[in-house]
Length: 217
Figure 1: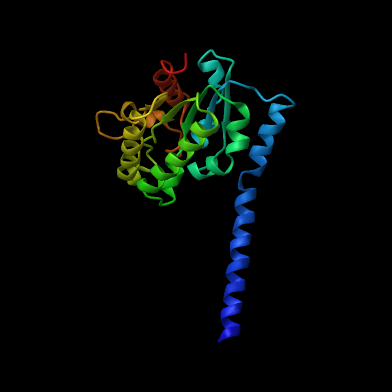
Figure 2: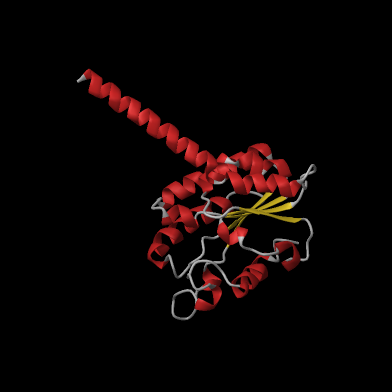
């Protein structure tokens, strides 16, 4: 019995370490590419856009907002925990003046509750304020995609919790893209999305640019 228990413990140890290695390498290539793009002198005091694929696939936000200080450091498939785990490489080293975050969408798709998403966001926000106390934080609401409409209630719940939290903070803003993406049918318009019903079209990004413009002066 003792031998079986030891084998089980060993198996769990190996499994945990294997998972840790897979997790460590999950975004390694994308984050290493950031270092290549940065060269020897990472942009400092920029307006940093980061988060999941809705940021990564934003072709040229610097051009859209006519602001060369905007830096896109989104990495596809990421969750809020991934911003936490890669905080130094993705956020801190740029010492941004403003941080625009889109994350939480993939979290809920992976069956995390709104409470977990909110808790992770609070952790990330706390890290930002501890290391970059003067940075302004802008959280883009989890969007109402056609592909993930079945999760919309949990997404709205997470949005509400984060919105209320940021309302109590200084230099922190909740950017509502959810409501403008809903049409008169009560569901998101197809024009915002590619064929997969998840990733956005140019028209979708034009809408986001319009909504974000007052914040990105």
